[in-house]
Image (cartoon, rainbow, N blue to C red):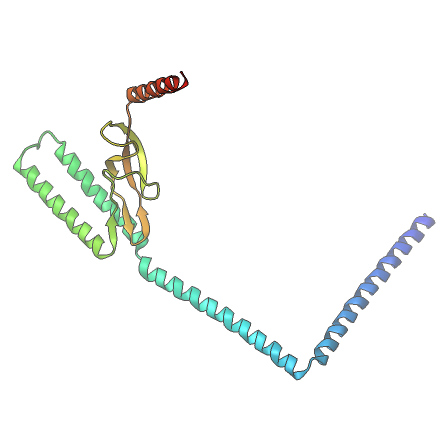
Length: 212
């Protein structure tokens, strides 16, 4: 027991000595730093001050630019979320129109025609208001599928179109200036399976002929 106590005391003494040495070194470093600062000439001090002022000015300028950018974006795209929500009104108008047109009880009646005319007028007015606020519909039909603008929901066999051509627009997409408000939901064309098989066979036959 006495030996263990003696060893513990020695360990504690060593720790205390190391702590004292660390404190002495820190105090020595601080003293040297102060001495160096005191030894600076007036010209060096002026140069240091100019450097600090230049850095402070640069940081202030960066903050000003960030603020201006955020302000411009808030002005340009402040109604972005509102505009995207408003597109639901157009969707509902289109769904209502389709429902009415598919209703056999009123199909081909004058009442239906008048309702459809009013719906089309409202739709055109809304599109016109959107355009005045730099919100434009995305071109889709007969366009090549662009993943940045269109979202393919299904494929339709169509040999009259190049593969990947948009043949149906499920939901209209819109841009707000240079930002995508929402993508167009579309159906794209694909070649028939029979044509693909025939093309593969023709290609295989051509390769055989070349080898022979």
